[in-house]
Image (cartoon, rainbow, N blue to C red; front, side):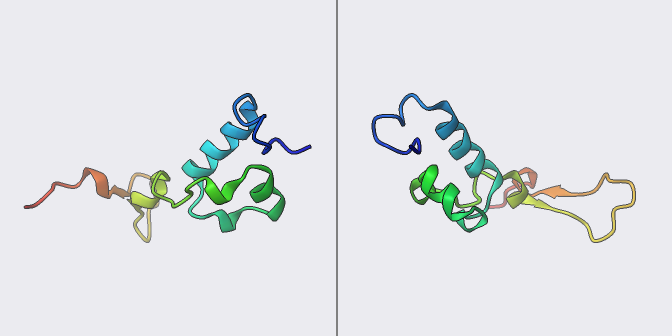
Length: 79
């Protein structure tokens, strides 16, 4: 049986870990297979890309030294 049943959600650490990683690493639930969406109930996981740090980083076109990139959250605020 899949761990999405109501009785197992509170005790199944794999279920919660997978959903947390999905929020942190994905931009939408479309990145997952149908089996993963059902097994981990990803329809309700609020996967928006907001928790993904790559959402906020702008990489330069050419970065030979691997030192470039700007995190827009670190830019000064105006206003």
